[in-house]
Image 1 (cartoon, rainbow, N blue to C red):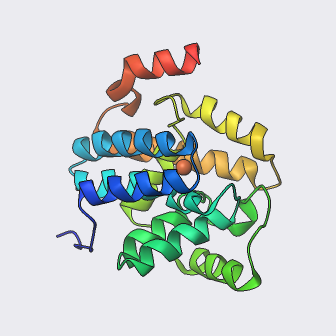
Image 2 (image 1 turned 180 degrees about the vertical axis):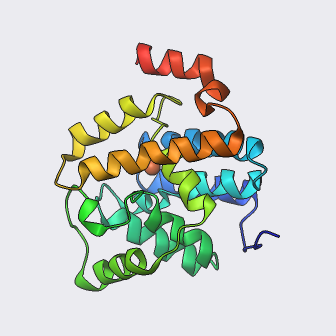
Image 3 (image 1 turned 90 degrees about the vertical axis):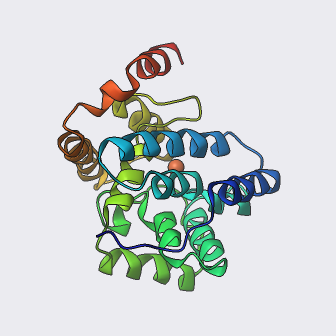
Length: 205
Ligand SMILES: [Fe+2]
């Protein structure tokens, strides 16, 4: 029996995202909507909680409400959702960028205070990812703001924008392992669940 966690309703989660997008308007909000939709579809095929999957996808980058920030967005989202009473959901804000579970895999500006960094680091050192952490890591890696695409396209785009380091290959390999994990759990190639969209978004954008 799956653990039940406090969650906002779908409508409440959409309102939180809409509010966040007024604080820092950007295509990031659409990336969240695409991620939510993909997570819901895959969850439906894996007999997971589709509502939890959708809401986790919708709010994983909610920390972007705090402005055009880098590492800070993870902490800001975690803090916001925890404050609202969604402590478990808040962890998605910390876990989603780390299919390879090490803060060293982070590329970009370290725009956090020492206290914020210590929250993120200690989470990553101790967390045991659940299936929803893994699902959102996967969906984050196959969802642009335009739609669902091949992982290859999305991770190369992210790497071009944020750079790479000694952990990048490990992170890429961990991402492809997630795809294999969900292919097996869904008993299908998950790309087949989005076949037309992946073709359009991968090759036309
Ligand atoms: Fe994301």
